[in-house]
Image 1 (cartoon, rainbow, N blue to C red):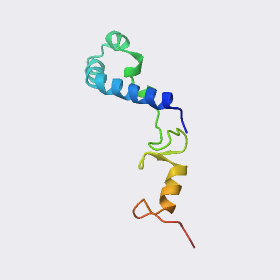
Image 2: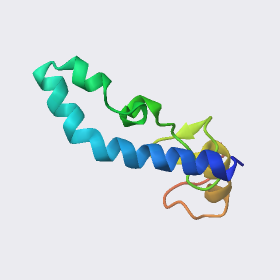
Image 3: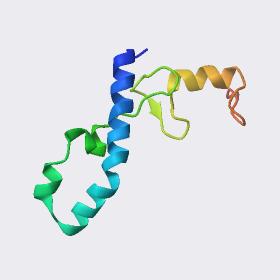
Length: 89
C-alpha cells in the first residue's frame, strides 16, 4: 500500500490541476507560453499519477474501475463487481 503522504500529494496535485485547468486551456489557445510557464508546476495534468482508489498502488491500474489488478481480482472473487466472474472453460 502506498504511503499516506503519496496519496495526499496526488490529491493536492489533482486539486491544483482542477484549479488552473481553465486558465491553462485559455493560455494554450492564445499561444501565450511565457504565461503558461509562470503557472505552478503542479498545475500540469502530467504530474498526476493514476492510483488505486483502495490501496494507492500505481502499477497495473485499470482506468475503467479505478483500482489495481490485485483489488480487481479480490473484489471479483467476492462478487462485488457486477457481471464479472472467474473464467472457467
